Length: 89
Image 1 (cartoon, rainbow, N blue to C red):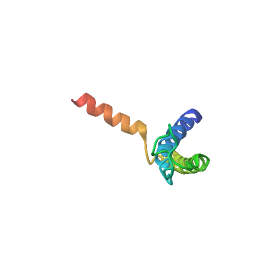
Image 2 (image 1 turned 120 degrees about the vertical axis):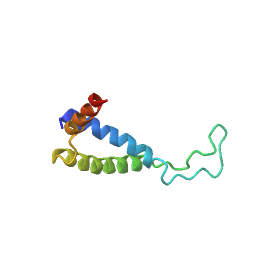
Image 3 (image 1 turned 180 degrees about the vertical axis):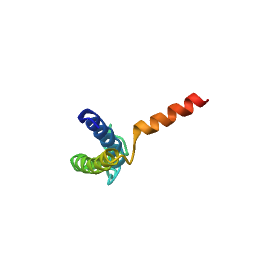
Image 4 (image 1 turned 45 degrees about the vertical axis):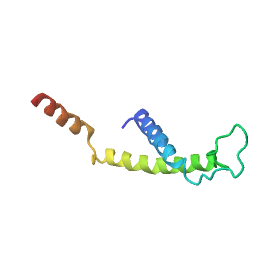
């Protein structure tokens, strides 16, 4: 995996995890102000969510990197098998 591929993979994992982490711990405001949605969170804690997302994404990225590095996942072999299947049809 090149550095560029690793960075792109991390960004993709980060965004996926961010959308998974965003709803955790949200509680709606007791008194809704005019112009705000009734479902708007009282304290969204975005800084904490970004940090948690970065940590979780780093762990998942490391696992994927190790799987690719030690040939647990071989994308070239998968692509070759898919090409053979396409040619057989």
